[in-house]
Length: 141
Image (cartoon, rainbow, N blue to C red):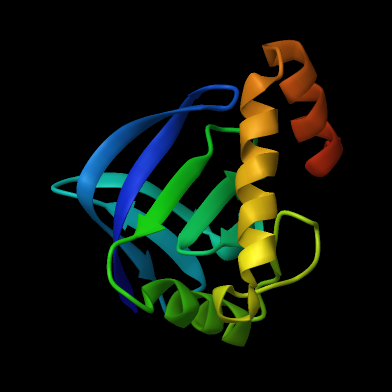
């Protein structure tokens, strides 16, 4: 399945740089997720990712601690279709409150909470943000 997105890559903790206004998020049959514009941007197995969904956006967090990706769906309904496709593949989507969620079940209050949480995280000093990320993504030995 293909979804048109705007895509930004984490440049520094909590700071994202736009990579492409016209990119594609591709969910492959073999359980992988890819991002591409005129060239490949990112590719990984769904097993090696933690995904967070918010109204019209998908946060892609690689478990190997490489930079995160933020995708904003550019077509109406694409976010809920993507969430449904991911959940059909057994992928758990995490909302800002840590509860499994899909865009179609997110309320306006959850969306406002997510925006508030992101704003608070962006104001954290880099070392504190790193501590939050470490708490969310378990270290592997």
